[in-house]
Amino acid sequence: MDRIRLLYECTGRSAWSSHLDTMRTLQRALHRASVPVRYSEGFNPHALISVLLPLSVGTESLCQLADVRLRGDVDLAALPGTLNAVLPEGLRVQRCYENGAKPGELKWLRVKGTWEYGGGDMAAAAEALAGRFRDTPVQVTRRTKRGEGTLVLSDHLRDLTFSPRTDSVAVEAVISAAEPVINPEWIADAVAQNWPELRPEGTRFCRQELYREDMSVFR
Image 1 (cartoon, rainbow, N blue to C red):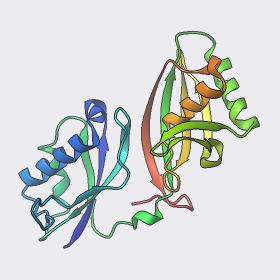
Image 2 (cartoon, one colour):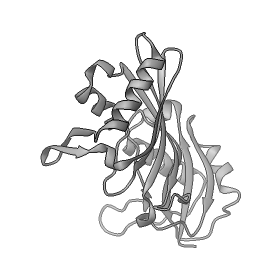
Image 3 (cartoon, rainbow, N blue to C red):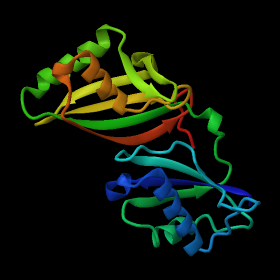
């Protein structure tokens, strides 16, 4: 057995850990579970673990994937329970398996979010938001390593919906997860930049599922 893939959740307090902190937590859990993880060679060896789509701080996920290189066999059926026994609250392994899909096959990500408003008519806000994204190409300006850049965000969204709640608007969308990778917070940024009167006071997002180009589930 050379490589396995972990499907895990990252919710609650764990969503506020940085990517590096989460990686260290996974490494410690694998060590405590006596998983024979393979290490790189050289003067500073490190565990060969990679996360396919790292999380932004504060974003939750029900569909995180991590690849782990091994130097021996493990009991895949028992491993989720063994790891969950030593992982902190909010990190929970759902499945461990071999022969995961190639990372290049990943294309889409479904997210759900909550946009908080201080008051007002949430039905009207949801209707206005839906109309803005339906009626015109929506651009967003974001910072990159090369400076500021503008992206036609609506070209990389599918199935975007806004639904009113008591004091918030529920947002759901399928966003590009490759070429380019879209941060769901950019949807709120686009609203703030184009229609500041509809800008939410706070946002929360949770990843729901990963897909290939044809919308089949990516595992």
